[in-house]
View 1 (spheres, rainbow, N blue to C red):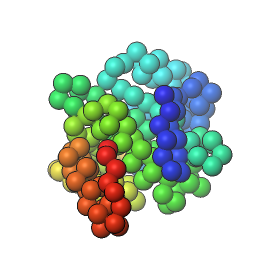
View 2 (cartoon, helix red, strand yellow):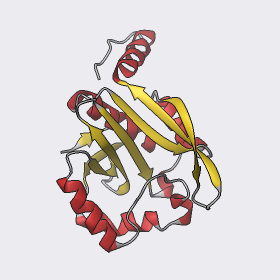
View 3 (spheres, rainbow, N blue to C red):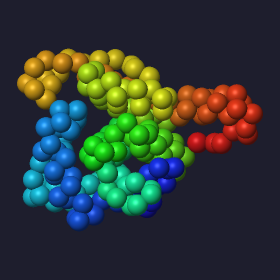
View 4 (tube, helix red, strand yellow):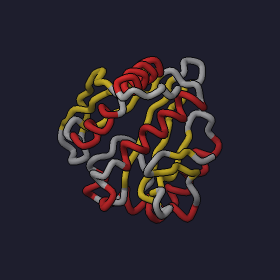
Length: 190
C-alpha cells in the first residue's frame, strides 16, 4: 500500500530501512522528542517489524521524500480500535535536513486522509511532549486540538508534560469545507 501526499509518500517498512530507523532512535537530538517505544537495535527492529506485520491494530510506514524517494522518517497509526474507530498517530522525521520544510505536515495530512477515508476511522489522537513546539504547531495546522495533558518522565529523566491531542473526522471535514469555500474552490472529501 502506498499513501501519497504532495511532498512525501508513505510505503510499507522494509528490512533495508532498519539501519536508519535504529540510527534515528539512537540519535540524542531525535530521541529526546519521541514519545513511545522505538527499536534501538537491529534485533529489536526485526522483532518490532514482525509484530507490526502480524498486528491488525497497527499500520507502520516508511516516510519518503516524493522528489527523490529518500527515506526521511517513519509514521504509524497505532492502537487501532476498529469498533470505536480510534487510532493513535505517530510520526518522526529522522533526517534533520528535512526539518522545518513542511514534510511532517504533508505526511500527517496524508496519513489523516488515509485514516478517515480509507480506514473509515472516526478519531485520531496523539501524544507529544509539551516542549516540542515544532511538532505541536504542525499538528495544530493539521487540525488537531489539545485535549489534555499528563505528567510523565521525560527523555532526560526529569518530569515533563505530555500533551494529548485529537482530531475527529467531522472536524477535519468541516475545516476542509470552510477552507475550500474561503478560497472559492469546490471542497474535497476526506
